[in-house]
Amino acid sequence: MLHDVSVHYALSVLGMTDDHPSWATGIAPMGEAVFALRQLTRALGWTKEENRGFALTVHPDAKYAVNISKGDLHTGDPEKTPCSHSEKGICTEEALLGNQLSFGFMSNADVPASTVQQVRPTWYLLLRVSGDKILSEFSLPLAMSDEKKISEWAERVILPAIQISQMATSSQDTIDEIVPTVSRKKSING
Image (cartoon, rainbow, N blue to C red; front, side, top):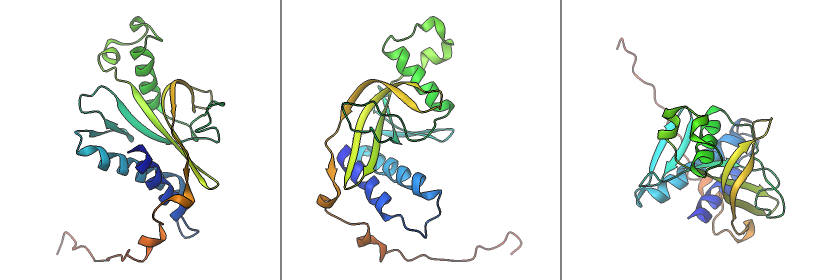
């Protein structure tokens, strides 16, 4: 399943062109990866959760949640420690606090009672397209750097690299099928 999410992400990355807005090259593939994870897990009882733009896919028993992020050049390398590619915000900070509490890295006395009641580990699927490979790992973050990038991990599950040349489909297969429909909305006044 994580393999399929990684391939869906890579197809989106590889499908970006000079005609896509520059801001889309990072966010659009991440959105596609979240979409793929949710589609693949829905039949298994997983649910989506959105809080202030923090997109999670939640285990049926709410035992843990999954977020997706682009990783840096150390993603998928068992000899190095990766960081998230971009800086993260308050929702990630709160999730990491929950991870620290879940695994005893911090005392409950150090945080508000409302946070302790909502403790649930949040794992990250880190993804990176590098050369002719898709690199990924399923990892449990603990802390962020001063630059607000996730930089410390309690556990890392390195997933096998995927050769882009071995992927069964190409994003070009679907380009010709996109036909935009444009219609004018009626105004409120008629």
